[in-house]
Length: 76
Image (tube, rainbow, N blue to C red; front, side, top):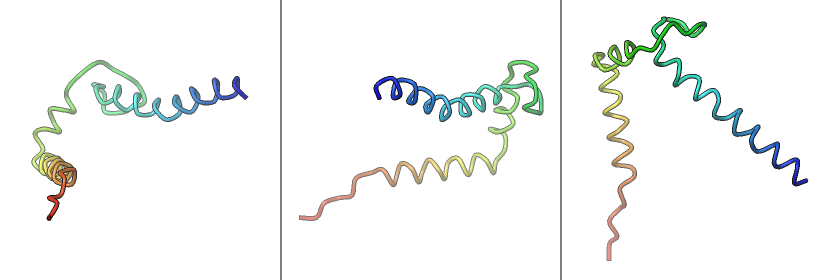
């Protein structure tokens, strides 16, 4: 059973985190597609931060995350 858990857990973590790592790496891709990597670029992040709708959604998400994580006052 010990050998099974030593193999099983790394495989599960690999299957969980590998797609996230691939998306992060390809977010810096200069090409317009994920089929091949053409080169490192911040082009898509520049476009993201110039888009007013995307920035509005980002600020709304951050506002919701911060306000929902604040502790509620305890009435005595």
